[in-house]
Image (cartoon, rainbow, N blue to C red; front, side, top):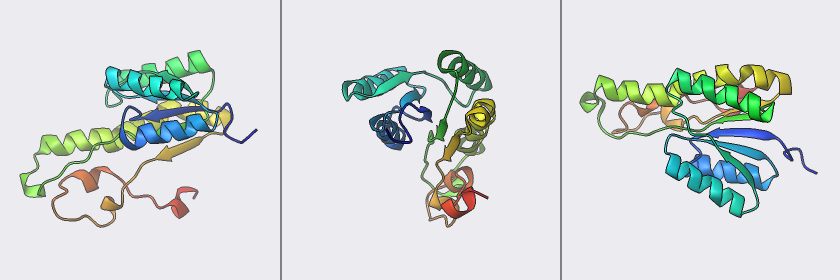
Amino acid sequence: MNYWQNKIVLVTGASAGFGRVLARQFAERGCQVILVARDVGKLNEAAADLSERGGRATALPADITRNEDVKSLFARVAEEFGRLDVLANIAGKSARGEVRNTTVEEFRELIELNFLATVACTHAALPLLLESQGHVVNMGSLAAKGASRFIGAYPASKPYSPADTAAR
């Protein structure tokens, strides 16, 4: 048996992209994976894909930019699973364009999803994670360290956290 066998893992942004790939990797290692995303159709498709591959997956639709959804999500996790071993904050969105052409609302949307939703999910998961001595995985971006032209508000919304400083 490996370390990950039977761990309860919640992955935000699990319906597509890196979130879906990461969820599959956790499932292949024997984890019970809780998939979270807004798009119910894509979320159910991702859960079915993991189940067909022999993984254990549960789809829990939520809009993590809404505090009510976040509170309900983690209350449900506590009720249905009794614990949480890993929170993977993967949900995010990128944007392209010059900053001067990026509206305040576009900045706000990216900051709410890429940064504040991560904070909200982490706060809501803390009681469960402290009890299990669990892990938090936050998806950052090198774009926050050295922004390139035409990536607009994205670097400001996606913190950069190198692995060597995460444990401090």
